[in-house]
Length: 477
Image (cartoon, rainbow, N blue to C red; front, side, top):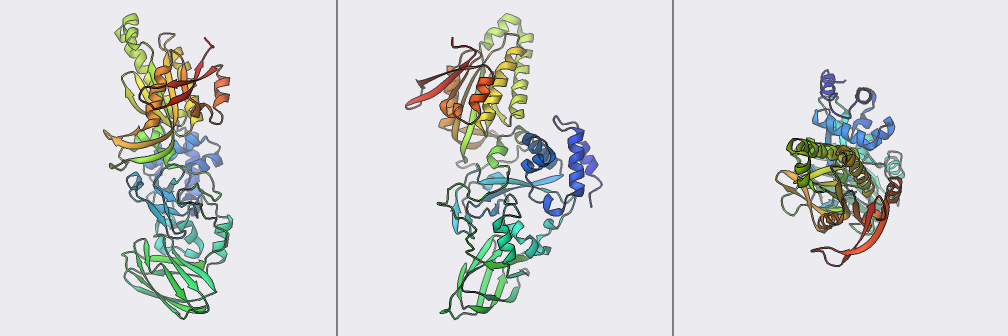
């Protein structure tokens, strides 16, 4: 049942740039007709593909809908071994804490690149779905969806294998002792609690004698986490020491369908559908505009493995005031800032800050940053009718994201190089590091813009070693 105030919430979005009536009407129809499972931990990227929107339209729609109380979002650290969705109730603030996947028994590094998924669920005030009350779910049907990321397709081999092999499902009430019986084969059998991600391995062997397993469930932990048992029928005594009902499923382990990572920090190894990463989200202008209260840890910040940083500056901005007068010059500079913000947002990036007449922007992909740079150079030149020319610099690499003056900012060698590279640019030029120029698709954007590339190696003030850069200009001169 859809809430009667959904139309009012959608009406509040109709005045927003980029949210057309067609897009919002299709979203309303989706909220009405989609099954419960489609409205739980949604990916705006998959929604956009299904609705023939761009990915950025999907992200902006979901963020505005969250701000309007239509959706809720959750940050989940993804296990590289099994794609478990390890929830972080504190959002960005808790992402620096190392996570542990009990299913794979590995620690997961704190990084918000591809390791963190931001997923969206319809708000219960708009439409109540069964996932809003996990204590009432049929865990044989929904336990796997609760435990693992929805970006691991429901029809995937691991999902199907676990579903087929669920031996037992049950629920322990708060403070109570839950008893159950099952039969285990030789080898490992695993007990999972989908909502709290606790795991117990039952290791059955002919020489083992124990036929009663006593387990204490705490918040996110099971004690013991492994138990040697006899082969055949055994009894479970589960003491739920939490204040909430805890559901569990039991399934054989070691099916061979879960490829384990080579190391805790290794890339994700399972095949998964497109999802919104934490790194891409914080580089989105709409997120920075709407969710300023989403702060990050004050101690040490968060490490980002790959960010593209773009700096711009106006050529001779002081002289512009002398040539055209204060009023016209101020209007041109103001419109220049608005144009840069619009271009950055439309290319999937965000303005981080302004410094005088200079701008710092961030992007999660070098290709998007270069597209933005080319557009910025052309549009500002047209805006100023020759009076305004940008000098642009770009670099890609790891950064530290911190909260400074109540806003997200970036620091580190990557940022320093981007700023220095911008200083090499002449009026109307773009200078990027070789890391940016070598990224997939960047050379095609440069060629389409009619820019000539000149590679060199330069020494940058305060940076050790020479840096390979590429100067992009309208002609070799």
